[in-house]
Image 1 (cartoon, helix red, strand yellow):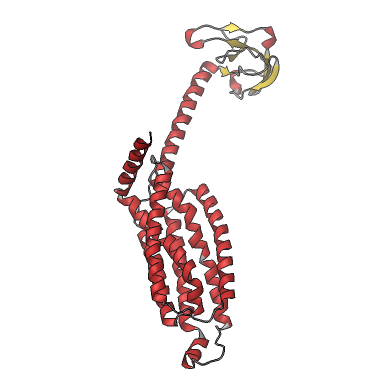
Image 2 (tube, rainbow, N blue to C red):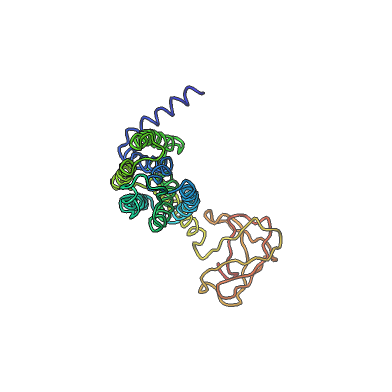
Length: 334
């Protein structure tokens, strides 16, 4: 019922919140996500401090989002293929730190700014072309790590919390990210001030906040243990299935007997084998037998079931009523 479900969910949340490894991971990813949301919120205002127009800032943000979405799909595909989570997240956070660091550098060194600030009454101060090109490049590139972390982070969360519903681990992760984002966004807004075009000092202070947050997330991401509980469980299950199949296959092939299918239509011509060619002479005749060999019983199905061996293969008509334990034997075997 509903009450027992709620109790179960709360119990799972409580247990996961006591998992230090998972909570450290959530904190690192939460800082990455909050940094992305805060940067998207303040980017236009920050860039306006160096006279980047709203049109240019909007184009940067649009292309950044598109590139980030493509990167997110690529990251998901690579994640499925290689099952690597921790170090790609560290690398993406480091790359994000570098991109924001270059944007911060351009806020400091734009050659047009010193003259404009010395002459506040300049009619139309503009950002230099060089700075604008560099800002375009690194603002757009910043979308790669900011969006690329999402599929990897959720996959890693399911690895770390295997055995619990993925909705619970995902909810905890996004709750922490939302709380951190609220604090970071309000902090960035306070640093920028109430002016529509903030001073360069306020803009650089805001960028330092973003850089510190994302750099901290890169460092924190180093510490969670790279536990792949889900992958290990699946590998164990596959190994057990393979082992069971090998055992069953070994039993069926015992004494040179080759298992034949019973689900084929009557008199369908099928290939049986391959099996060791040394067991049969080329051109030797054989028959399909039906029965439980563990109990020593065997009955020949019929003369139409004759087969002829060639190398390590055989062609034969197989009836649809063949017992699953049917085996293929040379006629001259006892």
